[in-house]
Image 1 (cartoon, rainbow, N blue to C red):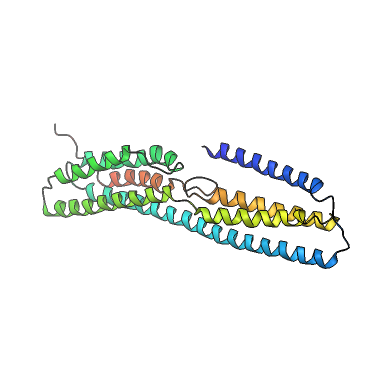
Image 2 (spheres, rainbow, N blue to C red):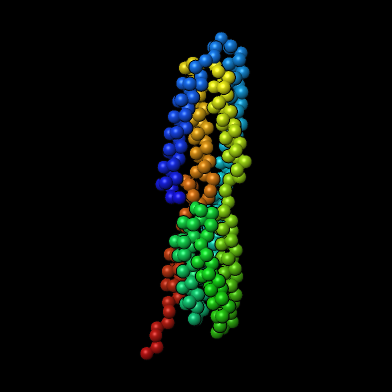
Length: 264
C-alpha cells in the first residue's frame, strides 16, 4: 500500500472516529444528574487516570518506534558503507570490472526492488542472486601481485559484511511494534472515552469539552503510533539515501582508477 493511500485511509478513520464521538455525545449522555458532585469528581479522576495510563503506553510505544527507525537507518548506512569499501578494494585490481559492475547492480537492485517490498515486510530475491554471483566472482579472481591478493581478501571481508547487513535489513523490514502496545492503548483509550458516557453523567459545557479533548488525544495517539509502527512505511520510513550516496561514490572511485588505454 502506498503512503498516499495509507494517509487516505487514516483520514477516513479519523473522520469516522470524530463522527462516532459526536453521535455518542448527543445520544449516550442525555440522561443523568449533575447534582452528584462527588460522583462527578470521582468519575473525572478515574477517566484522567485511564488517560494517564494511555499516555504512558503511547510515550513508550513512540520511543520504541523511533528507536526502530533509527536502528534501521543505521543498518542501511552500514550496508552502504560496506558496499563502498568493497568497491574501493576491488577498484585497483586488474580484471575486477565484472565485480564492480555487480556491486553497482546490487546497489541499484536494492533501491529499486528491495525498498518497495520492504514496506510489505520482505526483500526481493534478485539482489540475493547478484550478491552470490559477486562473491563467487571474487573467489575466482586471480590477483597478480601480493598487494592485489591483500585487496581481494579485504573485498571478501566486505562482501561478507554486506551479506550480514542484508540479513539485518531483512529483520528490520519484518519488525513491527508488538501488538500488546496497540491492545493496551485501545483498552485504555476506550475507558478514557466511554467511562463518562457509560455512567450516564449529564453533559455540561465543561464535560463536553473534556470529552472532545480526550477523544482527540486517543485518536491522534492511535494514528500516530500506526504511522510510526514500521521502519520502512509510514511517515518516518527509512529511505535508500545511503545507497544513493554509495552510487555517487562509485563514480568518484572510478575516477581515481581509470581503465588503462587500449593497446594499439
